Image (cartoon, rainbow, N blue to C red; front, side, top):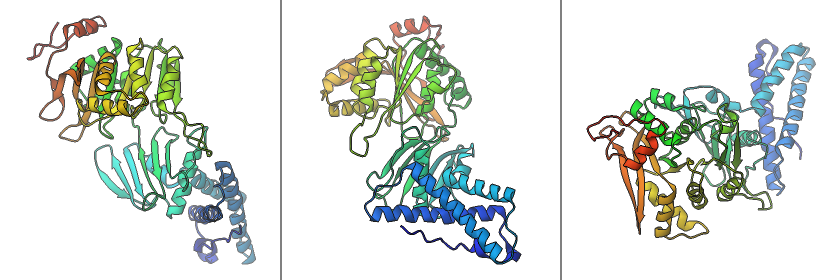
Length: 451
């Protein structure tokens, strides 16, 4: 392949208006990015495999050096003074960081108030802030091709195992260095698109969430007692309502002496990185390799995890066949296990569990699923946004039993007028006894919640 240098105006303008170091580094970045895009397109047209992350980086570094050398040669040809060594080092460092770091995403990721980043192409970039605002912001790349290269760079930095992103594998699900999760698609959409979900509270506690208004002190005490009494809990809710954050906060109440196994599609929980839990085995699902082999799904990881002598198993999100081994884990001695699931209501969780179970290899019937869930899951905690837009616990259900096609539960907290949880049906006496054993005292309320 012959790489034809892009003649950027900023690199060839007359001496009286020489670009600043910042402008020069940006010009270098744009030129090299375009060359990398051209190289990727050329390889694709020839039917060749995309370069690996290491190969792209090596090519980019060589092109960056050559581009700066051409700029210096032009200056000397015109009888002008070349950059001093220190200035040249700064320019190269800035361009290198923009090319092989997180590029146009970095400024957004550095903003602590940014919660979600959605990009429809390089220039259709929308940001949602912690206060609920949604704004369109500046482009994160100069072209869609450059955005693809940026995503590939992110993928290379997202873990020990490189993940492909090309027409053959047009989707990418990866964790960013700061713990955020990015999902990107290409070829199957009009333009390359990505979504980034930030985790603003990677070390969340129940007290922090109470202070943020997710629930009141009485509910905080109940949630704490449920974990300490080793109740199996599923945290439910729609997209971006804080399920993972609440799961982390619940996990913060697990005694440090316990051995935990975490199962995730993409690492998000980070329990193995905090100082609260020294004995954690984090496991992440693996995609198939280029030959279509080697895939390991969450269902298989749950089975593996049960062989590692866990005190509790934590599944980041139930989304398929792992529902059956997860419920088996909860019902065979690993009490106190936790998971999340997408559902629009607390009752809707049971429908989702049944739908996943019938699609699993075990092909469980509705009756068999209900029996399994009733023997495994003790509580469902549902999250939603209240009428003011804040994330909050809206409902808590205690699973009682199963009766054929019906799963019997009590909604002990139900959504109030503002969609925030308010006491409803009292907990069962046996449950109150279990919670009392770990120090819980039910509040005095009009519904009669008291010991």
